[in-house]
Length: 460
Ligand code: SF4
Image (cartoon, rainbow, N blue to C red; front, top):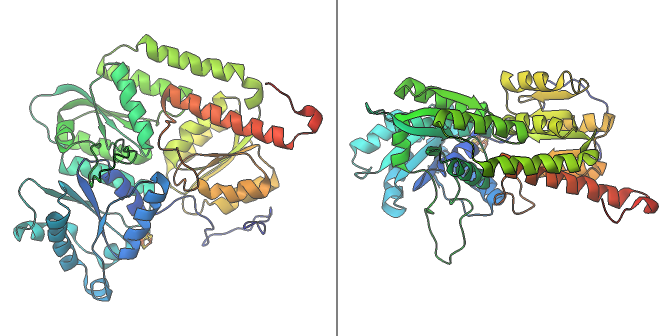
């Protein structure tokens, strides 16, 4: 197979990353921009960058992802892309008629030093932004950070360009959504509705990247947070950020700009992270937790108890984004599994500190690594040194799973070789139940396929 030359022996590497556990900033900015209704993301750089970002999202969501590009040529690469962007803004409003254009930069335009504030002002001065339309922007230089950083920058830009405080605060809770699937966002909204909590979820990709096939092309599907809702986030009484890496920056900006206090909790993946989210929402929205949600929790606990012997002690390797990996690691511990190797390409102290707190006592032998040098090659080497019973991560892990004959649960971004991940949630108690069942099925299928014939049982 492709990775058959990976050896167990590690050589100290400082300047080489092999199969990084991340992708580039604009992918995240583009994804977050699609969570605003009527918004067309715009990539300020070369066509190649934009094509890559669009195809990364299209392949994952199996939906056509629309975005425009400044189409840098040799000239703009040397002298700057100001005139390209100004004429792109004119063309976009004339031809595609979005409500908002969300511009993000790329490595090239950042290296040149294009000043988006000045360029967008020029477009306004030239009368190229029609009345009632908006051009927003954020910087996403991809030689630092990852797709998660780009996502965070775009969410923070929503606050910068929209959130407005009036003298009257409303009994509404902002939920700043970390990088999740559209199905997860739908589930978060369902939970809030069950609790009768008034919320504004932003961004919101449900109804955009999981829209039904109707036979009619919609350039801007009906989903997404609206501009009016984004403006109103400045009048909400509290913000809950879901995932520190994706949303803390936006939460801080909203507090500074509109005096809306905030708390950042983990994305509600697993039992305990969902408990914390539900508790936080209940407390800040001042609403009780209904029996229907308590029952969902009970069904999850029942599933875990019924199948504990299959989960117990299984060694797991996982990789992906820190906002998912932290609560996922906690959930695996809740299942009595052993997360032994964890890798994320996104840097940050919070990941290392969270892993230390979660694993130092329960799985002291665990290895974890974050940042640009944390790659899947090293994860594979760790697996070669001491094998695992389960691998969890995006599509890139399939090579390791095949080479090492490890059951493989696909979770994260991108998943390009399977369907359905954007339809069924992984968050909340229902999502945790889905996830636990996926894990169970993979582990048991692997056992049935690999055990001795006399060990194959007809029932659990
Ligand atoms: S890493 Fe930079 S050059 Fe490459 S696709 Fe991303 S933005 Fe473009």
